[in-house]
Structures are given as C-alpha cells and as structure tokens.
Amino acid sequence: MMNTDRIEREILLRAPRSRVWRALTEGQEFGSWFGVKLGAGDFQPGARVSGPLTCKGLDHVTMKFTVEQVEPESFFSYRWHPYAVDPDYDYEQEPTTLVEFRLDEVDGGTRLRVVESGFDLIPEARKAKALEMNSNGWAIQMENIERHVSAVESRG
Image 1 (cartoon, rainbow, N blue to C red):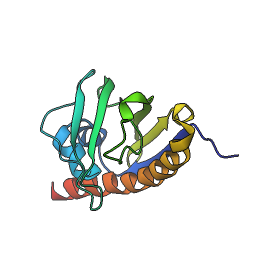
Image 2: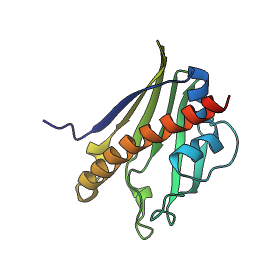
Image 3: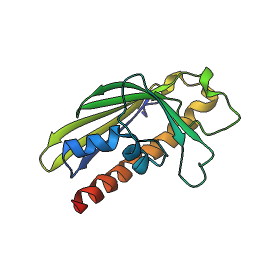
C-alpha cells in the first residue's frame, strides 16, 4: 500500500558532507540546483525564504519556505506549501508539509536522505496531485543535487 503522507528519497553523493551541506543550506547554491533564484547567505532557523522558480513553465511561481531546523552538516528542515503553483490560489490557508534533509558520512561520500511529510493534512482536492508532483519532483531534485555537487567537486 502506498504511503499517502510522505515522500522518501535517498542518494549516495560522491562528495564530502561539508560540500553537500553548503549545497543544501546556502541560498545561491540551493537555488542553482533546485531551480530557484535566491540570494546569498546561509539559511537560519525561522528565516522566511522566497524566490522565483527558474524552471521553464514554472517561472511564474514564487517558491516560499520557512526554515525550521539547522544542525550543521547533519540535518536541515523547512516547511512549505507543496505544489503551490496556481497564482490565483491562496495557499496560506492550508497546512504546510515538512521537508527534512539528513546527511550521513559513508564510504565513498555522503548519503542524503530527503523526507517530505504532512500530505495527509492537505485538502483532499489538492492532496493527490501535490503528492504526485512532489514525488516526481524529489526524484528530479536528487539528480540535480548529484550533478551540482559532482560538477563543483570535479572543478576542484
């Protein structure tokens, strides 16, 4: 049976944990692999972060999230409204989902685990589509961060 409340993804990144951490928690770096234009600076708990998506077809969308927790080089989390792409819909009235990134140093690099949870609280009219789109999105984002940290590492 499929879990309707959470998405889980995991990948081995052939890069040091400190490198992956920067890609996750520094605004411009996060934006470059995630596909959003963000300013420079490290994410801090309580910070509200926003910027326009740079993905073709979604460039009308402003990504917004609130940083929850930051435990250097091991855990980072934020809350956002999943699949919030309709400019005429007020997502602020809905519950958010929690996105968690866990990093573990392993032989050959860093294991990155991403969990997004809380979909069961999303209104039924949007829940299935949000779960589907974010599930597909996280699969793509894992490839994006892998390319990002690999490209930077290979340049030295």
